[in-house]
Length: 328
Ligand code: CP
Ligand code: NVA
Image 1 (cartoon, rainbow, N blue to C red):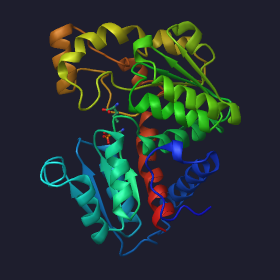
Image 2 (cartoon, rainbow, N blue to C red):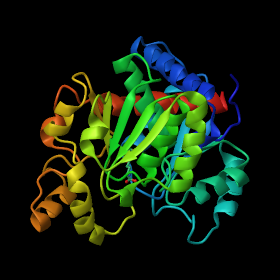
Image 3 (cartoon, rainbow, N blue to C red):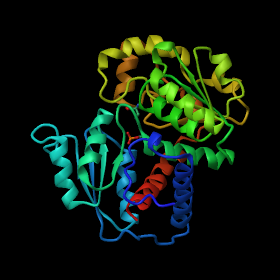
Image 4 (cartoon, rainbow, N blue to C red):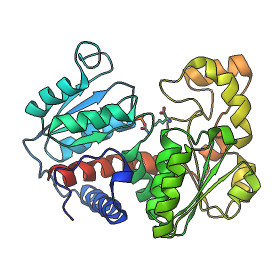
């Protein structure tokens, strides 16, 4: 498998075999790291991380992974560069392409990261856009495989805001890898129809299936994985909280949901999560609307079924695999 020079912008651009190869590579790199085996084969290369939105996991994963591979990292925070304000994406891409070996971009529209990739002449990795979060997908699939031993045929249920980056990306990934994807939410939050059609075409070839339903009972019955994400994403206006709480509270992942899934079902969340009052936003939502827990209850988040911190760790191993495969 040769992925050298490729961009990593969305999983629609990758075949099931290529995705599986990246998950396998991540598993191998994870084992090497645990055993203390050095793997700095990208020594001397330089990468730049552009973050137009904030991050904990993605930024730290890129930095630690780059250092483990022997690379140097430059970090551009949401306000520290000329991007978009004084310099176009195309010009920025051509400048960075002359200095670096790879570019990570987190920001708004998918078209921005696509344009960056078109103009840079070096691999560009999508660290999250409004539409897709592909590096998160590899970590999620590695985590599921570690806990379930397989991916194809598993029933994967996504609850909550399924029309944004996480819902879209998980639907694509499940379609590619032969899984039974269910989006369980109010129809207003179903993924984009065009993308659903595209995923159904992919599913027809891989043995996957795609179901969109508002019925929690149908959705979670026999589920192997229950997944959720925040109800208001980065870049969305704060005023939207009231509407989201009203629309999505019926799709909160709580004990009743977990009880109706398979006994050995796992709970997943890309994080950060609102499961208690220990965050600024969590507290302000509580003060305004009275809810102590949002997309997931604290009990489920802290339960033995929750694998969210395995998932977070795997961000690093999988991002390392993407960089090694595309730069190596
Ligand atoms: N899951 C995820 O992308 O986390 P960060 O926003 O902290 O990078
Ligand atoms: N949907 C979330 C994902 C965070 C990793 C957001 O875009 O804020």
